[in-house]
Image (cartoon, rainbow, N blue to C red):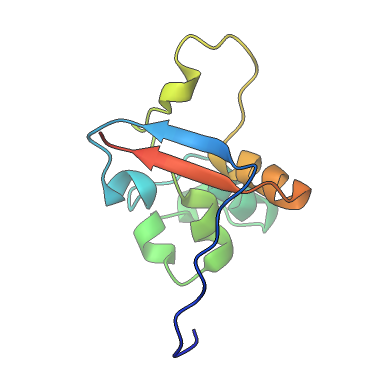
Length: 113
């Protein structure tokens, strides 16, 4: 970070990644509970030969950026209101964010009122 404040610019062409309700908390955004094997963080650990019984919790792996970024918004109780009633194949917030990053599309997340 610079000592000088950055310039504020407009975000053009952004898409909404998630529309979250009024009760969103930091526990939803950065979970500390156990991994779900089929979620991106669990898939990452499995691909690196970590046995499921050794996953432990997100909280125990806070120092591992590759795991934690895959765990962002991975709380099983989080509800992306954009998907209510949607009848199409869905992917994780992590996978969607990476696809948009690679395409150069800015993203925003809305939470609360």
